[in-house]
Length: 115
Image (tube, rainbow, N blue to C red; front, side, top):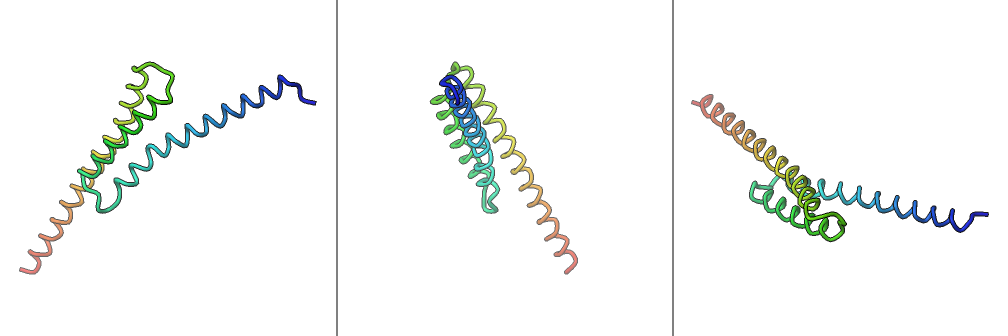
């Protein structure tokens, strides 16, 4: 028969597992959802920047609310999160510009063929 101490340890372990799992899911969704929104075909650079800004502000508020660390920890987490999203916006913008240049190049080559 389990003792009172073993039941307490099991409850503590279960709670810690739940908290780690919840944190992992929240962290994954915090990165994936903005990226999904920014990759919608009609997404412009302005839309990507607005999504990134709102995401960073939301994460900053959530981390500040649930963190037991100092303001430096919150700042570091928020800055790291912002850096990931900014890199994504930059690479998406570069890809969009490259695709537009390729389309214009194809259009001009078709135009010259017709002449």
